Image (cartoon, rainbow, N blue to C red; front, side, top):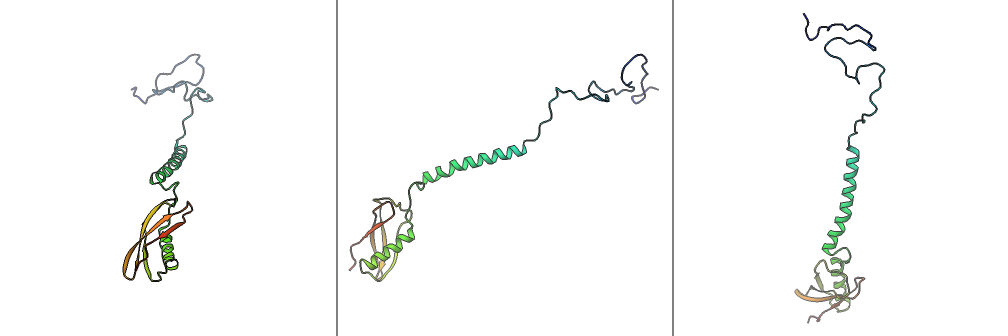
Length: 154
């Protein structure tokens, strides 16, 4: 009985190398002792994991270096210094008390996001003797100094 796992017929003669029997015979590059692998075969590629993450990181940094200044520029805050609202309100209250003699100034409200550039004008309001009054503010230089002017309340 000759099945798939039975040894096949033996070959005789002047054959060099080991003799193979059975249905499974190695190909020309496998199974022969002492034979080196074919030098023309390319080595297997390494996974891109580390290089991929480095590339993603560099791309993210580059994108943020472009996106952040563009966002600030579109809002107008990259090159335009802004006045600090709280400092202006405190300063206006001091000017009203010291220079205009209004010792009982209760509250000063100024708009936010005012540019600290020469010529900027805006209006604040202040409370005096339970009434509200407007006060004009004008920025006089690019260092954020301003002038306060009012018609004195009676």
